[in-house]
Length: 358
Image (cartoon, rainbow, N blue to C red):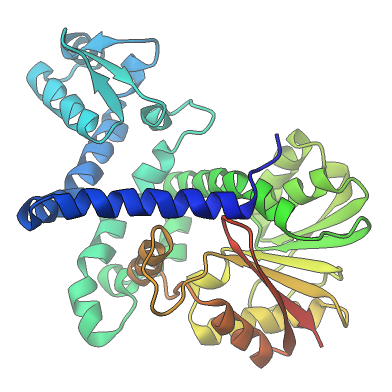
């Protein structure tokens, strides 16, 4: 199925935002304030559900709290209260007979759902990640990356030491990539022939979708040894493994991979400006003259507040050393690394900021 045009996607996003604003405007300010401040409840409820596998007994169909509690060995009254809380956020439905049913969104709590986000919940609600969020008052004063200051380590070193959380994080990033990929593929004029190199692309989810859309293109996947090992099975499952060359490399120290197009999807937003320039210099050193780098990011204009990009920007502040940037800011980083600016395309999901190797 062809993805909707970017203009349609943007119109739906604007309508959703307008309806939310209208709903908020009709509420007394105190009620709206309590609704917003109650977001911590959603986090705590999802954390509890994933850690106790509370959604699993609901997978076959409606169950009462007594049935769920008996299957999992949990406290029945508390199970009912927690499931009822999850119903407020649309993750389950509660009927008049006291039975709970998973919604389409709630099924993402299941460990074995094809699109499961249970691993993301474990990562996003881990004690270390929450410590980063809770340090934001101090970060407002000293400007230090919240996660690093709160835990004494970087998010990347933390995930390396917690492989289960790292795997859940990576799986969710793949799911989000697959959600956005059809729009990105449809929006950009990809060549029929040549080579596309995905830099820091994990298992190559974005690269695979480009190659599936252009059967005569070849691919290169650049990453560390761990992601590359997992990529072989993933790319085979997508039917493109025979067209992809694996290259072990580092974002900062460089890699050897000549290509016509380089992809940097959700890479630069993890790093500060100096680190981004180093990453782009690494790409520039590998890139032939005239080749293009496509920076795929949610674009954040300085004076525009919108979901999810503005919340993602604060998430970068709480968890990494990076931020979401505007197209002009990304082009400025590219110019400092030896690129000249090309087109900026709004895919409806991600911005596509083109940099040309000069």
